[in-house]
Image 1 (cartoon, rainbow, N blue to C red):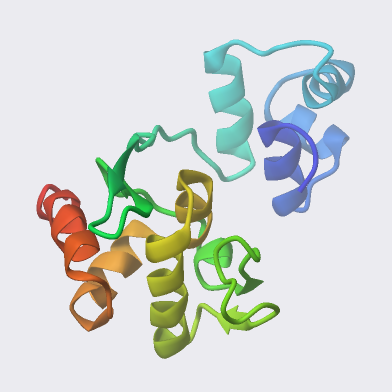
Image 2 (image 1 turned 30 degrees about the vertical axis):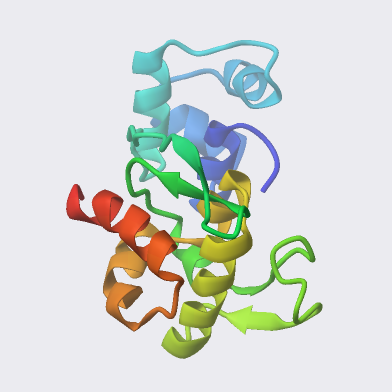
Length: 166
């Protein structure tokens, strides 16, 4: 979805700029400037605008990844914390990039299906870079699937530390 978070919230709420500006006690030209990036709202102003659109600002910890070399010399990555994805992304139909899913190029995974999500997570945790892991793996759903995932022992033991600190 293009635009700033204010524009995204307004569109998802089904509001016009005029409707949102009136509800938020902000002029329409000012709201337009916020959405286009010509002007930056204060945090208080952004919170007020988002609140009247039915949204709130939240902070989430951004996980840091460390590179671990497997016994076979191939690297894999482990996060120091779990994260959440937007529900639409966490349960989407997706095709992994060739760099992650080289053994089954073009395969589509339905992440709403538990079994397919497990196969996807296995591929991403074995082959993915940090950008792939945070794009396709949801922390809560990873916890739910953890005991069912088929992973090399070293990957499992490294990720066990992250899952234990959730």
